[in-house]
Image (cartoon, rainbow, N blue to C red; front, side):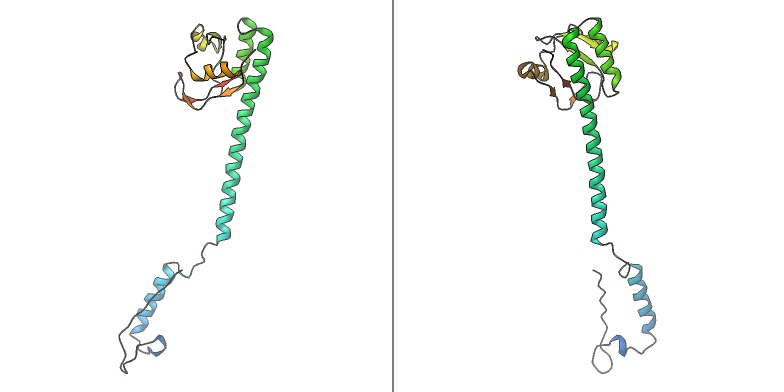
Length: 178
């Protein structure tokens, strides 16, 4: 809402001046200045409607929904890859050349996967891919909450964001093989 107030001294007859009673040419420049200020301040310009704001809000919600769906699809693809790898490891075993081939295939399938490892029921790493991750073979991971939790419930688990040994933050997705 725009509002302009104008106050003036009383005229010769003791009554306030009104715009219709201001015949004096001296007020014309003042009137022009006031109108210029009103027009320049946007008071007479078209205001954005609530409908436009709702349209922008709806567009934002749609974009947010698209991003959320994309992230969910990516997580589903990761889960599917790891589930398939875990199922195949039942046949190949948790270590050895066939297990290494499965782990390599999982890492190569998605750029979001940094490494894939297998560990025994005690939390000891048996196999790891890519080759740069093989340095953790034989390490005890039982001190990590996600490893203890997964071994206890024997179901797939995804961690919260954690600091990664490789640097940065990431999540761990665990699929037990029994």
